[in-house]
Image (cartoon, rainbow, N blue to C red; front, side):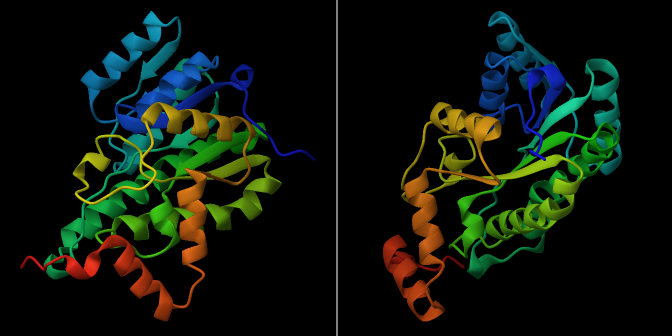
Length: 266
């Protein structure tokens, strides 16, 4: 049996983290490709602006504001989307945040906030969405991870760990989701020019325009396999580097990122 691939004729697309960055651009790209999009984020004003822009282009984005860390409200949001717009054929769990984590100034709150959004924010939407897809016998879900999930990187001990977790979770779920005819994918972008990467004070190799990244993402949803990663040169470089023994990995990464020259800031 060929594993299901979502089409606009089967239902609607739901995107979390849709008010800015990749999520916003993806909503507009999916509208251009014929989808009706349910858009979730905390910022109601930004969602209203997104809906207006989609309408001006002849498409439809419907705001469903919600905080992805609220388990109860996320389940209610899925129910509201299906009642108002119809079945969710495609769900893209994109909501995420990045809080730089410095080894010399560790904070429990930094890790908790990161995991609440980047990991449990995915789970809070994934569970009710899949529960709705199971009785229909088809569905497609995609989780936005990051190439930082491939291995440990400076300043990303919280962020990278959360993205490694969603990669592992998606891999583990695929075994059973395949049996239910629910396609699961993980999207691992590199550096994309969004408000999230504006926090970075270090060089970002392969930095992509959000429009280019979004087209790659949408193409991956339409045609790609389990993992969709871009830009490929950065992604595959990091994959290969993480095959090295630790005795080589750490000196190489320190040199490549100039980390030995970075002073501690107590």
